Amino acid sequence: MTPDWIAAFVIGLVGAGHCMGMCGGIASLLSMGQSKPSAAIPIYYNLGRLSSYVLFGSLIGGAVSSLANIANITHAFAWLRLAAALFMVLLACYLARWWQGLLVVEKLGQALWRKISPAGNALLPLKKSHHAIYFGFIWGWLPCGLVYSTLTWAVVSGGSVNGALIMLAFGLGTLPAMLAVGYGASYLHNLQQSIVFRNIAALAILTYGVYTAYGSLIILMSR
Image (tube, rainbow, N blue to C red; front, side, top):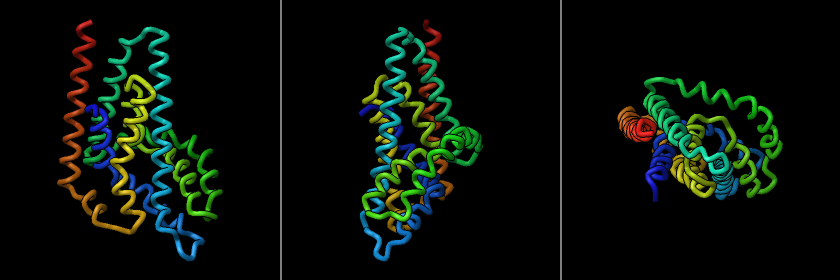
């Protein structure tokens, strides 16, 4: 287990309050039109959502790694890792609600989402419970600053497998809160809204971001 996997998991865990806010209405949407909603629907939905994250990480990690090997631009990874560290700092500021600049990044994906979202809406109401997997896979593309921030780590992961594992770790971090939403639990939501919890989590992410940025700068200055 690498530090990046741990960091991705922590981002998902502490940032899931944002996910709950964006996707809190999913449970009611998926149960729409069903007299007896299946208890497996939240599991199916999150399975699809995590699958989309893994695909993102694999594709972007593999593509960047291949380009770097072909063009022999390994030195560029230090710059990319520095950019990832800066995203981590932005994410920490967002989670603690010190500064909401990360919302600007989310808006960049709105145009693509407007083209993709009708495919998800077409699945409603769900004809079968397992169709929630497909719905979750599509909703994994919902513009999200947390996802975009973690994807920057997949970029510098060094390959498709590591990229996929980083995004899987992030997805697993979000899972407890998202399942809590699906099953109507509220205690995790209350914890996510705690000022103390948010600030401690943000400081932890900020520290890791600064540490990573420092390491990248050392590499760049030594060349």
